[in-house]
Length: 287
Ligand code: SF4
Ligand code: SF4
Image (tube, rainbow, N blue to C red; front, side, top):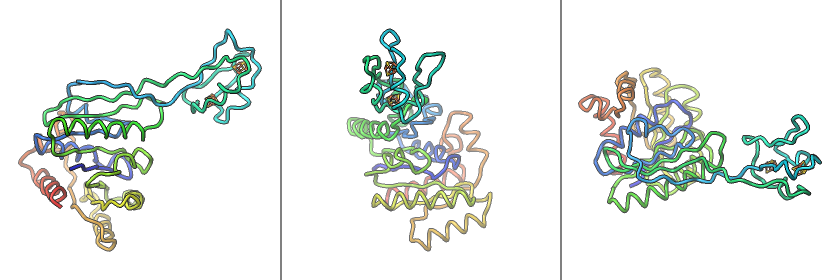
């Protein structure tokens, strides 16, 4: 069973909820697909048994021994990634899209394309099973492709280790990395918060998920911070026939758990919050 936990925006508590689900049994594959800001490894401190390089596109590099400063590359670059600095043409690593046009156009063959090879995918073990996660290096692109790589690896590791649940921490937003995180999963849980922007972003996420023939669940986190808005969101789910997983109250225990590198399930196993999370988890996986 594969479940992806996503949110239309950051800061909803998605990763805390993922961490709670990941520590409900001893047979879990935790897949951190929030590759731009993977952070569950900080809580779980997994062993790193495998490290793989992810090539996130290419960057143009100029060989100044060959360059005659004709300026053609700057003229053609539609990403404004090449600028003239003190009579030298310089490529900005962050602006370069790797389109190769300058490499093809340079009359002196002074440009080469180098692989962006600083991003990584890690596989390891944590206290409740195995972990696979990706880390996109700053400025590197194609996060969707890295998520696909993480998910493929996660499925393989889960199969090899006979792990029954794959818990995916998806990225926030509605971009290609989110699409790569949810396609083909058994369940999608959208975590939202009781604010106008929470409702707005949840609707956008629901629209995205519905395009992939998935029937998502909605969970309102910290509902007691604005109970009127929480009721509006619940009503919206009822009206639109959307599976409603439930509501969680705000709790400082969640922060305490994170500070102590634990999930709320581990930190406060007898709390009402953990009981609610367990019941939500059971409802979803048995549906
Ligand atoms: S096109 Fe080639 S030779 Fe001309 S400025 Fe660019 S790198 Fe130099
Ligand atoms: S590879 Fe493309 S984006 Fe990068 S500097 Fe060359 S023309 Fe510009």
